[in-house]
Image (cartoon, rainbow, N blue to C red; front, top):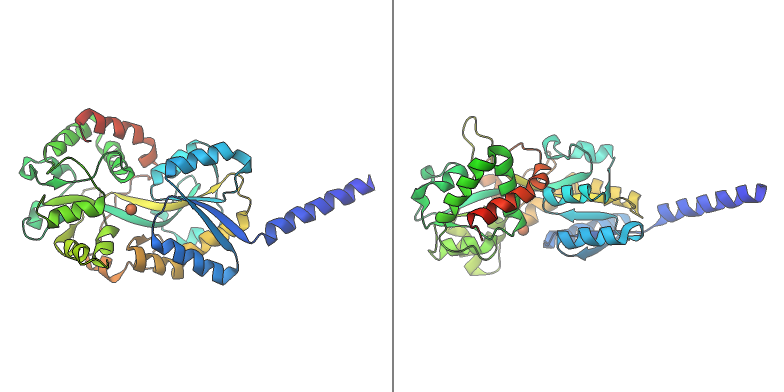
Length: 340
Ligand code: FE2
């Protein structure tokens, strides 16, 4: 019996040593930005903990986590859409994250009410318009994009894109099926061309005179203006930013977060929490805003100078998990209204 007890405690100590001494973290990442490499290098320098990253699409990574089950080496999953985080929660892949530091670092209205994921940044899916051909006083709401004054002038990427699916999910949750279906039909009539390309391409199309307004994520304007390619800088300069749905009584501009979830069996849980405490802290939050032009999840940090120059805006306070729960319905609206 005594031997068993000794054996038990030896194994216990060995197991806890392994946990405490583990010198790495494994991340499955959908994020595709340069700034992440910088953040992980800074964290590694500060702590000696090595950050390993595997990149793929979020659906592929979630499927991989499901197939690997308990044997998955992944500690964290990071993506750019609360809807995909919510999908992983529904698949039973994550555990709740508990840390007072993270809790005090992050704005309350950006948090997951169920505690499964942590926001690090957020972005607005807003409008940009041609400085030459659009009067900003003609712009108001997402709903107004259905107005026929925009016939042949609207640019947006395809409905297979997660950013658009999240936007449509938010509209569905806020307006209901009938209104959103009518809206989408009219918006499609206003397209300047069939949806193609990414968000940057919509801005370039405005610069080239192919359309006058576009729906894009906020940070792409910062990325274009700071690009090494002159054509991208010129495209960024040809447009201005507009935050829809800001009027009195209006719900605010649709936002989405970039965020992390911890896998159910994270082998390096303590390190993973340390990383999230670091990434939501003031130093790393400043690194995000000044490199990727996203908005900080930590309210103690200000956006980059460029992003601040657009002014403050009211954000839609819809529970961000709705971006996941309404996704299937949103995709049906796209399909039923011919948004390619
Ligand atoms: Fe992006």
